Image (cartoon, rainbow, N blue to C red; front, side, top):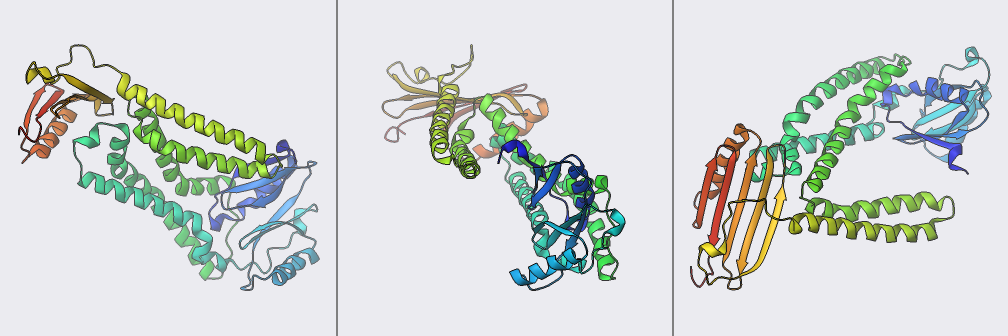
Amino acid sequence: MNKKEEKKIFWGYMPFDYRVSEALFSKMAERGWMVKSVTPYFAVFQLQTPKKRMYRAAVYDKQDFSDHSRAQYIQQWKKNGMHYACEFDRYYWFYTDNDINNLPEGFCSDESRLLGSAVWRKEIYSVILMLLAIGFGAIKLYNVSYVSFITYSEFTKLMLLPVFLPICFVLYVCAGIWIAKCRHKIRRGTRLAVPSYAAANIRRIFVFLPVTLLFLLLLLALALDACTGYAQTVILISPILVVACVVWIVRILKRHGQAVVIGRVLIILAMIICIAVYAIGNYRNFSSGLPEESNVARLSNLGNDLEVQSTSYVHTASPAVSLHFVYKESAEDGTMASTEFFQCRTTGFADRIYAYIETALEGVEADYELVREGRTIVYKEYKLPESVS
């Protein structure tokens, strides 16, 4: 089937809003898109002749999930002039091209089945994911150090708790109040009202907005790190992401019978992308030179007889520091001179970073120098070979 003959839309409606699909499917049918299948996150439509078609959503009320029992359930609806459209889990959709007044009012639709945790899987997974993210953010705040301020990804981890805790609290409390009211209605034996399309979409946002914001924020942090010189994280996860994308694309292409050839091409492209990302990361981190007039520790400060065998330079940035770099010079005998430089964006960030550096240096026995001038912090350290020290 041609790709243009099918369309996917994000589903994600909450279980108690299952009947919002009736108006949605009817509206799509008038445009020529007939529902073909429904999953927890997507509804698939097939292009046909536009027509006025009315849908009814129902909840399968039996404990028996056998094919025979399901066939009998579908047959009951057919006897009332309804045609089978699709099903998912306990949800069934039927349609008729007759007048809406002829539609049966959802007989045998036991909405108490919606109280089970199984039908709330996607909502539960979303909440658990956000709770884990907030918990991880709380741990990062408890174990905060100056390292938490030097990259966008580390700074993002630090902000998980203060950013997402109030958002999740407001959205989940509002959703929880509505869920409690619906549960109370069902337990009293009252059928749920057909929700409006706008209200159902707002409630859908309650659950998936925090997760969406979380992933967008993490992707933005990784992209900013890569653009400002810290591409290690991107280098580590890019092969996994590329392989996952390749597997996903191949699975789609298998339906069209072209997966073998195109799959090989995609694998080659994935390898090229991984190599390119790795090369770019190495170039940005190790080929960039020191900023002009940088005050750094050098081996020549320890003696003219020390020859520099290797150097390394890594620079990063974050919302807290406009420039952070680590520069090291190493000699053949193991002598090393290193410098860590911080150019903070505000005095407040400079105060915090300087305090955390002092805390980290407590009890450290090393030849170091820590200097702060306004929003600039410079840490220098000289390390001698073990035999000398």
